[in-house]
Image (cartoon, rainbow, N blue to C red; front, top):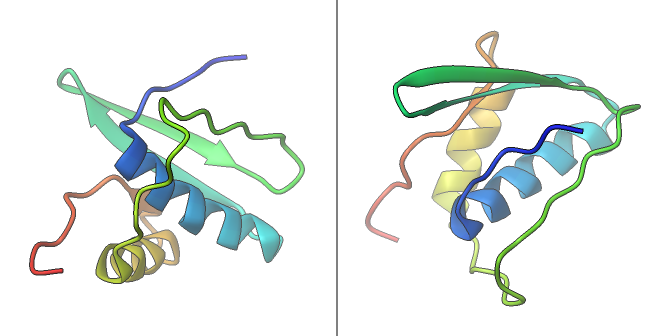
Length: 88
């Protein structure tokens, strides 16, 4: 099994959006950039997914960020890791 590392704050928001889609039995693509390379994975409700955090504490969710990510997840381009909106 391959693993991908994200900081806890981003991962908390990704988990919220991804589990929302999978709970509705919807597939999605997740794309991010790391070290100058673009990565994409296909997520499907029948495929197990594991989220592992560095801390026991769950960061507070930013509703604006969730809304932005949900819109991306529902778009043809799929969910992308984007910067957190400021002004929360």
